[in-house]
Image 1 (cartoon, rainbow, N blue to C red):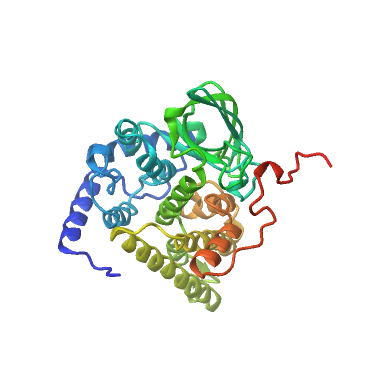
Image 2 (cartoon, rainbow, N blue to C red):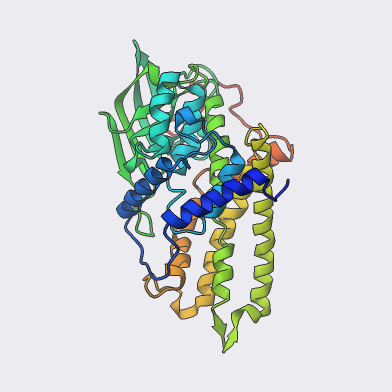
Length: 408
């Protein structure tokens, strides 16, 4: 890894800084917290502005709405835009997960129609893998797609779908064959989220928002032309999406350290700066090591991708460590705030109630994109080379796998 910009990268960074200075909003304290609908509208505005300026999806080909640059250019953009109060990572699921699936599997005509609209957030996308009965086992899904002529009829339920209530399209993984193993009987499609037979129900969270959703399919019809990949090839397609998902999440996954460092510079305990407290300093040192490790690991992975490699399982490291760290830091910050910790009003709470909001939402981050347990298994098997966990259903036809829906 080389953390220094090349002359070309330095010129690009200067161009980005100049544009952001003129077009992005600076971070301000006491600005209040907009509603979820307002944040969505704000994100749509920002993405269109970025696309019009030529900075959208920097590593996508130009004919698909991108800039034809590299992952390193994306990193430079992310580093610079982080200094401003713009919702730059709001549609990361659609662009980071669904975009690569469309680019890899869709027809050329579909790519040229769908991808530029996705890059500018003219169309918003969601990813539908998780199901109530499958838990963390994506391959255990039961939403069915039955072929009828040149279309597929879909029935079932997805859950924890981020942003589904705002989405125009979604990538969906379905069970198309129960006579083979669970990994060989899946197929991927994309579907119009506004069409008949698709019912989205937001899930109210304890922070007051509804980031996640349940999605029900009742005889929803998908044309075969919207199939992504081969029939029965859904598992391979899903792995492509999941690898890109972890790469996308690693770029926006907060770990909480910069915000904590800013907080401790302003607090006092018994008239003394809290940063002088040995216990606080010990926590800061520990979390800084983790913060620096996540950053170095992500940069190493992005360097490999920029040289033509695929995003690997190493992305699970940043997701696992960062999500846990983010929650732990939020809880610790509330302890440091003492009696003012429960104050949720952004006009009065430090950093616009950042830590209060994080404490309520961070448990969901440890589920989104794969639970802690899933991340540990990925790291153990694909990074450390340890043996897979024993599976009683290995090689078994999906229809023969016992489920809670079967009678004794």
